[in-house]
Amino acid sequence: MTLFTLSVCAEMVFLELPFIERVKRIHQLGFGVELWNWQNKDIPALAATGARFTSMTGYLSGNFTDDREIASLLASAEVSLGVAEQLGCPSLNLHGTGLDDKGLPVKPVEVVTGAMWLKAASTLEKLAAMAERAGKVFTLENLNTAVDHPGTPFAKASEVLALVEAVNSPHLRINLDLYHAQIGEGNLIELVKRAGSAIGEIQVADVPGRQEPGTGEINYRAIANALRAMNYQGVVAMEGWASGDSETALMRFKEQFML
Image (tube, rainbow, N blue to C red; front, side, top):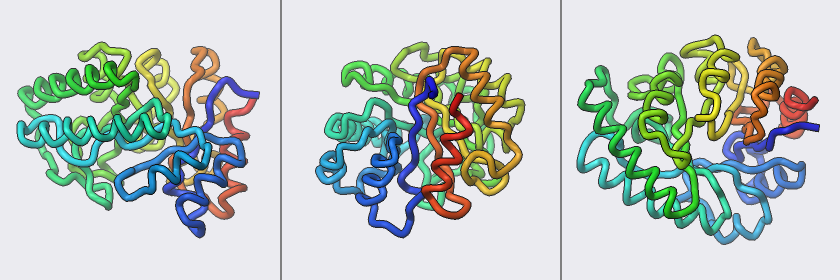
């Protein structure tokens, strides 16, 4: 048994199946389902699968720091909240800036200024208020800039935590991605403890390769024990590729987080 809700990103497993069939298969295996860009998905068909959607992308464009881009971000976040309601999805994910289809920043940033920090916090306060009105939660995900997302501002877990704590709303939390944190910061158990009640979700994959837990260097059993000691009872989501057969990968993921 486990205290956690285990979920799987449908963008990264069962790639041989049409997307709706991936969602159905993940659901049949007893996991929640996570989505990236919802704009290219058949939302009524997804809702009809009966799957439990635990997270989806919460914006389509924009960033936290440029006035025109902020307006775009807030508008697309409002639409995303409506889609989340259709899917019964409680959590919507954000990044430090808009990303393209390769995960690269639409507008890379070399230096994050103090003014940008203040503007980002103000934008996130607006997003938290929107989420509160909708009865949802936005989560801000940490990313790594060394391998996957170079040029992304507000990327480190420590930076995300600073913003989340500055806003201080239960409707804005950190999506603590341990794959990204291992590459960018390490010391994962202490990081989990430090994030504490600010955690809205834990995402996992192993390093190197971004495959299912148990295939690389991260001791996910120890992390699972640390989460239990904290009485964390939220979502742990596999956002990683299958090293081989997808169903086997999901079972390996589950084994890492079972008592």
